[in-house]
Amino acid sequence: MSDPDTNRLRFRPHHFLCALGYQGKGYSEAFTRNMDRIVQDRLRGKDGDAVEIEVTAQTDSICAPCPHRRGALCESQEKIETLDARHAAALKLSAGDRLSWGAAKARIRAQVKPGDLGVICESCQWLEYGMCEGALRRLHEAAQPSA
Ligand code: SF4
Image 1 (tube, rainbow, N blue to C red):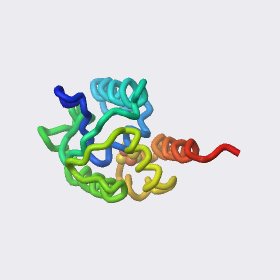
Image 2 (image 1 turned 30 degrees about the vertical axis):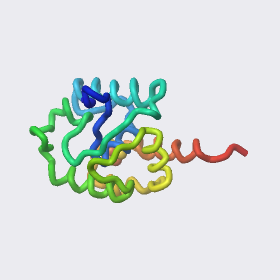
Image 3 (image 1 turned 45 degrees about the vertical axis):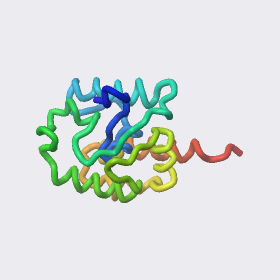
């Protein structure tokens, strides 16, 4: 869920790259519906690059309907904290930072190279499908000047 007053999204650090790579798959129907609203409708919709996101160290807009959420924690809390720490370091993000989705994508492009997900996303069940790596590669390719 976004902040009801500002409509700002809240993402824990590893969810910036998850949002980039999202391809309609998730942990449950409710989770996927929420992801569709956040990623397809807002971030990839009209003016998506202007959507503001606040970094949080806890469960966030994406976690809200997740069947693995346990209050403000995840049932795999240790694994998620490790993922968050790696992504926060790679993207230079801290809890409380606010940035637009456009700025987040620029930061991903500057800080995360194709091939890096094998390290920073290690242990994520979605890694082996290659969707996130594909999205990262396309983000880099889109920034190349055309010949
Ligand atoms: S591999 Fe997992 S943690 Fe990494 S971007 Fe994809 S869904 Fe997110």
